[in-house]
Length: 231
Length: 285
Image (cartoon, rainbow over all chains, first blue to last red; front, side, top):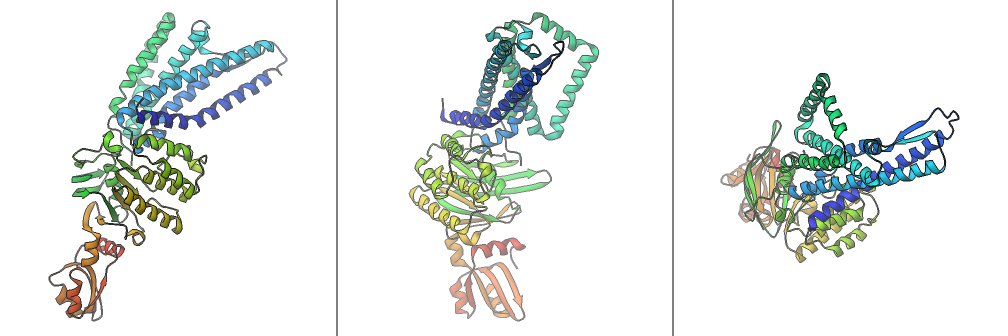
């Protein structure tokens, strides 16, 4: 790997380390507290529901958006070329999505096993991946990776639009997107789309989803190739 | 290294930061880039480093555009007065990261300077004092060994002793590894002896570009009676004049020996004063 790319990956890794540690510490802490609280529920008809994956999705989306202001200006300052920034950010997001998915799946398995072992009936750990298709470990990782990667890239693109074109430019694009979604909901084609996706959902769908996200990411080159510091 | 600036203009919303400037810098040499706040110095340095794009005109380094040009970005290290480094990173991480981007990075020097400025490897940038953060910038700038090293007010918060150390090391390093060093500062008196050539900017334009030796020899303050001084400066390039009663002081480009021969009192003009006089108002009396 060329030296500048190594430098960029080193920077990204060191930069995200603290944020990831804090996020996972809070998430695990909250989970343990919620398990302990659920053990106090005396009426077995009541249960406490907790979702790990949704938290990770939200966090990853924030990371995608935040990376624009948090990482890109420093990459430019240190002298990285726009091509290397473009390539390294794409690989970084995919790697981060994969590692988040791995941590998420492993943690989910450990906690689920612990709940089973302790025979806690009042605590349910929800997982989108297990709900969408079968509960195999590989599928879980694939689904989480695909969803996290897509969220990161979409939010990264939104972040780039705000960075390059300011509040007005970013706001216009966001406004148009929201309007488009509202029209989709009102006319019903958005729910039809979701239903048709859910009916065909399988492992291949998520592999394709990663592919489509990569294609979407390539569009960011248009925004990155003349990237400058905002003064 | 040869930096050619051709008709460079940078327009921000409602303000022209650089106004069609043209000049050439050739190295190795230590340049002083001087001027008041808002003169356009930082904008020029940002364009030179490939951080921002010019509105029109161009900068060429050895005939190539520095924007997104890896060969050149590896040859330019810009250290600004603040916000050079990610606050969450540790000192050791910053140094290691920069080492990846500068092929001629001097590990030994970086370590030596880190110890000299008492910076701990594990301290996060956000926990450094203003002066210590400046010291980190200085370490990066010097250890980068970049053929074009630019310091834009690099020592905010550094005490006088630490600044003196910096000047000494800068000169020592310059002797060992000759390069173009562009130094922008408001503490002109402190560093003017380092400068080999001075550029003074005002309102987005370069109003003076001259070898410091030449300036020291030719820029002088001539004092005497009004009439005598006026006679002397009649055919000279005047920087500024001051009159007090019948006495007059003129800051001019001229031969100090000639003035002495005419019985006038002659003094040299420090570069800081020269910058102030030149940027106070319009050039000339």
